[in-house]
Image 1 (cartoon, one colour):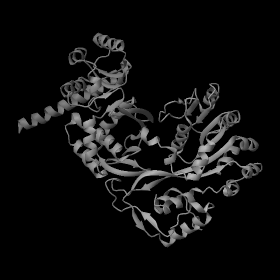
Image 2 (image 1 turned 60 degrees about the horizontal axis):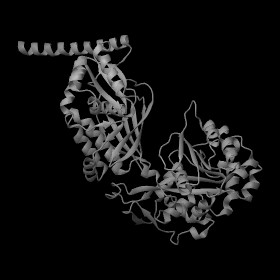
Image 3 (image 1 turned 120 degrees about the horizontal axis):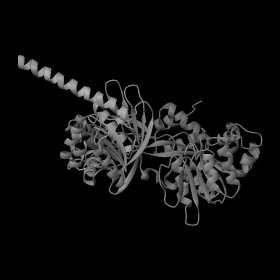
Image 4 (image 1 turned 120 degrees about the vertical axis):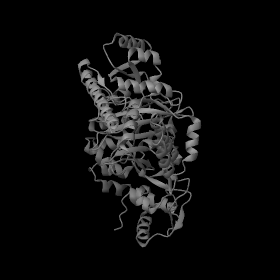
Length: 558
């Protein structure tokens, strides 16, 4: 019994000594003016560790634990140690930008233990998380459903501590790519952390896991994204890349302070997602051919409208790709640049020095043929963009309105003269994204309510050639889906559109500062379906379902 008591007492003493050492390191970090880090709570980046040999690190009582590009995080026990200064100078000479952190000797011991693991761990180079081709291919074979991803993550959580965070991230990122996710959400709750993917615009639960694993995962994500480890009470944004088969896929990291822990969202910017050709956007052929003709004009403005995440940027990029040629100069002003396109001069706004307004003025001095302004947010940007459209430039931009007809009253509200609008605007589009039914879709009969809605919108379609011959039949998602759609019944998305082109009727009505409804009625003779009508046409053709269409647009049944 005495031995047992001694053992317990020793454990207690060891715990108190460790805590005292950590508290002392934290206090001294303030004295020396450096940040404090506890390496037992931080995922140690193996690529950072490799920048110092084990002998060098132990000699200076230091360890490199984080690296993004040439930015290196180094933990030291004594910042004033001359050997630390020699080490930091050496790293500077090698081109590294070094941030020194203060830590305890227990933290350093944990880092030194990782030298033995280095040959097994996956590296993170220059803000790039590398997934080996073989590993990725194996994961993609294993991942046929969201349940498979959850199972693989659960297995990874049980692994040896040194490797598990790397493995968990591999599975989460590979799973996101395999399922075509646009975002990965980590949402801390009271007892656990919820992991969700946004698939075709809809959030889907993957699994729940513990807070300890999440804390280590969050630290690794912060290091990869070049964010501050010790900042927890404010929002942070960063980015890093995943390298697969020689291709780099960029991820945007967004961290917000939450009630239980910081909330993390990764946005996957896959170039293949934006690389949609104009023909594949979902435009009716008559509308597509008219737009292709309009975007060849030497000047004027084409607007796309819709809420965030409705595919406006994808549509604008499809236009730019269509008209991009060695003979034209195209400048874009974006916030931020999400995808890089060959042959374009892409610039990114900065809130202080390079806003949409002064960016647009500067771009005009470079004599471009075509300008894309990411978003018209205020009167100054609207006026400059309209003037550019009137002075020999083709201008593409986006506007936040609910429909195409609303673009004109919105620009008038921003202070644009209604007489100028008719000379500058070529067309205004509005769009939403609906999920496409998977190949496993099944045939169905609409309910009485759905049939009433279908009949109502079919009756108002001006161009009768667009109405499918069969209007009493619909297609439905298969309840349990298949391997192609990962059990969801839907795979991929397509846009539903409406458009208003400038003509004499619109030009006349603009003089009286019209409402959205008045613009809409004046545009009806153009024969272009409304978003609701375009959606009903796609439902009858088996592209999407009534349920999905109702989720995205308001189907008035009155």
